[in-house]
Image (cartoon, rainbow, N blue to C red; front, side):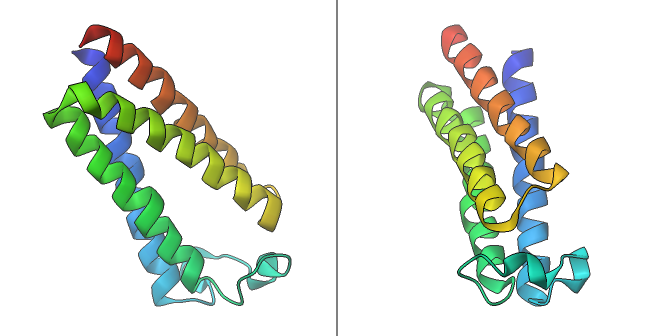
Length: 127
């Protein structure tokens, strides 16, 4: 049960941070609310932070919040959604590194994605 609680807490925290960060990027597409550099987008397909903010809210934020709810309410399918969300977060951060260059926060959230995958696999065994 402790593993499930840890997994849900990690997913909820990640989801909330992603929604807040994404909303701040959408609200201030120049990135000033998060002290992001618009020049970091030079090699990306984006002209400002608005669309990346939408992706952050929709894919990571809402994805992790829905996954946490499923993991808590329907663990028989929640574990697979958690595994998918963890893989998705690692992929999301990998794309960010390719487009924006390396930032320490990307490594932290990629590690969160890996932790979610490991916890999801462990929770599957206990279901």
